[in-house]
Figure (cartoon, rainbow, N blue to C red):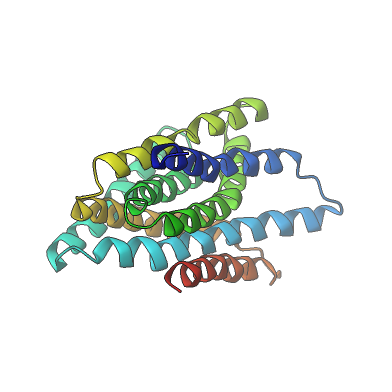
Length: 238
């Protein structure tokens, strides 16, 4: 299998955990009801922790490595402002999709980076694909729960849509491989833009949804979600 096929396969496998997470969200039925509620909020927090890890350990350090202070500031702030405008647009049209936006904002730039990374180290690309796949599972779960509770779309349609979204992985990975491998500054701007947007969504939507009054287990989900990203980063760097 040549590098192009490996990138397409790895990024697709990393993305297919999004519909797998959605399918788990569709099947999730736990009794008693209080436990189901706590598990759901715990998964939301876990996904939030994984997103925070992506921002703190991958998107910001990797994105800023080849950029000057002005480019870093403009890209990061631009992402936050753009996602605020998107959030206001979705709210005005009654279409909550913050979890979905966060999931894709994490997946697409990391897939771009994976494709570019493969030109330097196939081993690092493989590890990055594993990290992306693990992050996408709880994010797919959370995005599904948000959509099914706020829209009239049925479970099979949402899961099928997530399957199609997984194809964005190979597309992004191959763009990174063929077009952006020698343009680290462009990838850096994309990563920082996504990081600013994800951070906005974390504090605007995901963190508030993860809280349950008089329950202390869900915040641990955020701790373990961040730990997932930290261990992945240590594995890649080490």
